[in-house]
Length: 148
Image (tube, rainbow, N blue to C red):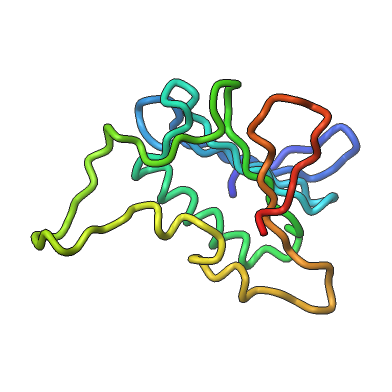
């Protein structure tokens, strides 16, 4: 993560933002070291937060960074804008494929925490790290729910 700033209560925060929009990756990462909560925001509302190859690479990098960050106890994944949380792969993305018609490479197969060995990073003397996905509906009365 890059760029540290102090929050209103003196909490150390780190933030990194991808290129965003239609120009490339669109992932904003913020970490509140005092609460142990990291927020991953898919930040491509013009494409309904669809994941392109740059955003997929940023997600992989974020999960791998969290694996070695003992201050992060929970991760919230959310989407920018109010129209959609995420529509999946960006259909406009050029995804290289193998030459065989019997093999297909899925660029989204490796963007999750389990695929990046985050589950193997448990320290059983500490509270568990549980990724949390925010409810995609805009009702503020609902709390985030665990992925599993």
